[in-house]
Amino acid sequence: MFSRILIANRGEIAVRIIRAAHDLGIEAVAAYSTADKDSKHVRIADQAICIGPPAPADSYLNIARIIAAAEVANVDAIHPGYGFLAENSHFAEVCRSCNIEFIGPSVESMRLLGDKVQCKQLAVRHKVPTSPGSKGKIEDEANAVKTAKEIGYPVIIKAAAGGGGRGMRVAHNDMSLRSGIKAARQEAEAAFGDGTVYLEKFIEHARHVEVQILGDQHGNIVHLYERDCTMQRRKQKLIEESPCPVISSDEREKLCKAAVRLCKSAGYYSAGTVEFLMGSDKTFYLMEVNTRVQVEHPVTEMVTGIDIVKEQLSIAAGEKLSFSQKQVKQRGHAIEVRINAEDPAKNFAPCAGTIEHFDAPGGPGVRVDTHCHAGYRIPPNYDSMIAKLIVHQPTRDQAIASLKRALNEFTIDPIKTTIPLHADLMRNGNFIRSDVDINFVERLLGL
Picture 1 (cartoon, rainbow, N blue to C red):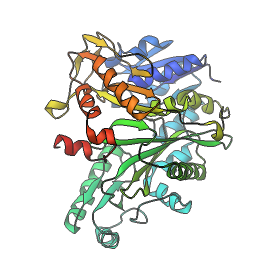
Picture 2: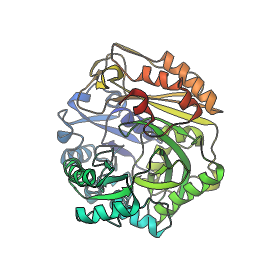
Picture 3: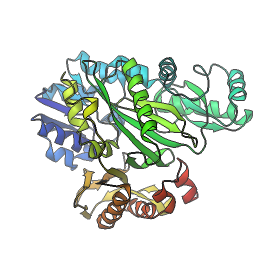
């Protein structure tokens, strides 16, 4: 096992990783920007090293500064968390070339699964369900139009690299397809440095269901069942739960086995997530693979009792998985809501500033992952998520009731947050019945 690691990230995930490291007897070094000097991850780390000014390009995305900090701290490994450099195969390659282990998958599997075109081609070969579309990247608009007519409109243009909804456009006719290809290429090039796009049939009224994977470097790979992440706004997840409330045991088994099959074919190890869209007829279609720990990993931890971050650390150190597939069981129901420093009444405008009063909920089955505290100043430079509230109860109805109570207890003043929005959604009849799709929240809010 490692003796010391560096966390190349910030916020609640940095706190989460430090705690897992400490539980395993590993020293943790926090890398931080000047904007994060008062963050909890800096306070609880064994050592903290400033890596630059607030701008991500000068700190959390600056590979040279992160490597320099790792060398100064004399660490064995670097954990990238999620976002920033977490799925950057070049960063993983640089870490390992400096004899610093990257706590994540191999460079080869990151590149293979991170490229959506190659990933889809691999999925087809291994009978993982995919949606009809182009066989590879779009070379010219004429072929794209031909493909769209063959599979039928609407279609969706997707960037081969990256994620988060960027480089994506839905087209309902030839004209919108041609303009959408140009726009998607430009956005993908700006966001990921790669303008490659491909085409798929657009699945209307879809749900978003993903499978959590863990694999070790000895060829063992298991699934930790699925999460339902259908409640979204602008392709950003708001609420995640496990298990998915609308699929049967047989459907769950087929989906999870397909996810394992895909990752095995890529020689994958570490934590990862295989994401699917589910049509209204309960047909699944591969969307992408995230080669990192997910924001929503706590709901899986709550229903399985498996600490995903600890397993990540052990896997990176060369150890075998501490359990087999037969030992993984789903118990009860877990729901997570993301608490963002945004004002829903003002088109979700970000709300930076100082938190004067921070009172988190507690009680049986309630977990709060956060880096915030009273007196903490939320910087304007990063993602607006400031906390995750997770509940775990024997049934979904009980989890919803527990979440209502916990949201009512959660106070963050004077910052505007999405707590009131989540409280409203917990009372929404469609959510309670799980009669939703990925566009439900936007329709509800009139966006």
